[in-house]
Length: 439
Image: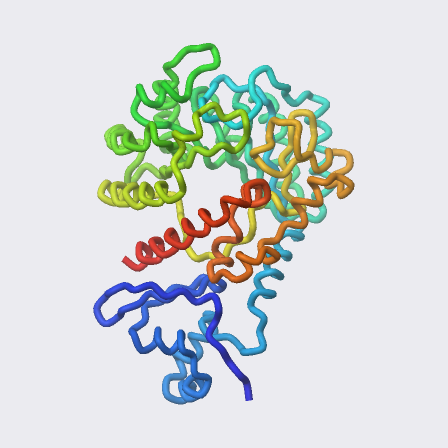
C-alpha cells in the first residue's frame, strides 16, 4: 500500500474570497489553488488514512492533489528532485544563450554604472569570425539559440551586430534552430533606420532605462561628453519603437529618485508609451554596489526591505493606470541564473568567455575563450559550473527554493552576508505575489 505525505513545497497564505479562506501554492509544480480552511488544515496536518479515504469520497480532488504536487509519495526526496531539475537545466546543451558585448564603449556615464567603460575595446572583424566559428561548431546539437546584445552601448557597433545576426539567422534557418534576440540599450541612438534594421535582424525586445522625470533622469544618466539632455533622446527612441519593437522600461531607483516614479508613469501614459495597447512593460530596478565602479554613495541606496514597500506601491499605481508589468513571481518553477549553464556565455569584445553581466567589461572571472570553450582549469569556470543552491543549507531547508532558485548567484557567492535580507524579501514578495495572482 502506497504511503503519502504533504509536499514540503506547499505554501499557505490567508486570503478571503467567498467560501475560500486560503491560497495554497506548490512551488515545485507551479500550481496555485483556492482552499477552504478544512482543505488547508488537512494539507498542513496531513493524515495518510484520511487521504486514502479521499480516493473514494472525492476521487477528482484526490487526483488533483497528486497530479499538482500538493501530495507526494512518502519515500520521495523532494529536495533531491529539485537538485536534479537544477542540474538537468545546468547541463542541457541543446539551448544556447549568448550575451554578446560588441563594444565596451558607451556614450553615457551613468552615476550607478558597475562597468569599466569609456575607451574600451570593440569586437574586430577577425573576432566576429571566431565567434561565428564557435557557434557553428555547436550547431549540430542545438535546438535553440538566443542572443542578448549588451554593452557598453551595443548600438555603437551596429555593423558587428548586423554581421553576426545575419550569420546566426542564416545558420538557424538552414539547420532548423529556433533563433531569437533581444537588446539592452540606453535608447539614445534609436532612430527609424536603426529600429527597422533591428527588426530585420530579429531583435524582438529591448530593455531601456529611464530614471524619472526629465531633470531627475538627466542628473543620473549623463552623456560621457558632459551633455545632460539624454532624457529627450531616450523618450524619442521609445516613441519610435511604438508598434515595432516591444520595450521593457526599467526605472533604476535609490533614495534620491524613488519618490518620482509616479510622475514618470503619468508622463509615459500621456505619451502612450505605456498603457493597455502599447505592448510595453515597466519595472523598478534596485541600484546596488555591484562593483567598485559604482559612484553613487552607498548610504543613498535602498535596502531590500525598503524596496519591497516600493514595489507594492508601484504595483498599485500601475494597476490604477491599466499598465502591464513585467512578470514577477508566477510560480513557474525556476532554475538558477543562466550564468551557471554550460551552454550560456557572455562574449567579450576580445573573444573571452565569461558568465555574469556584472563582469562584462572588467578583467575578472574569465571562464575560457572562443577557442577552448568552457575551460575547467579556470577557477571561475569551476565556481560558476559547480553552483547549486541545493547545496546551501539555508536554501535546502526553504519551501521557496523552486521559485527562488537561491537568488542571484553572483551576489550569493560574493556577498553571502546579504542572504538573510534576500530571504526576507523573497518571502514577502512571494506572499504578495500570491495574493495579487488570486485577486
